[in-house]
Length: 71
Image (cartoon, helix red, strand yellow):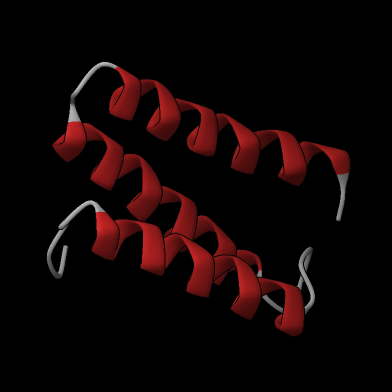
């Protein structure tokens, strides 16, 4: 994965972690949603499909654990 794409995705994950640490679960849900949207947008382009599927699946599980709902 290109370095710029990796940095962008890591920034979203770090934001989500910071939100969880601060008890701001709704903000964490939004950060994870942004992560999923970016992965979906880059699937087949800067991220191969298998890797994208794995990243989205993992982020979706975390969103479920945080009780983020459908959004």
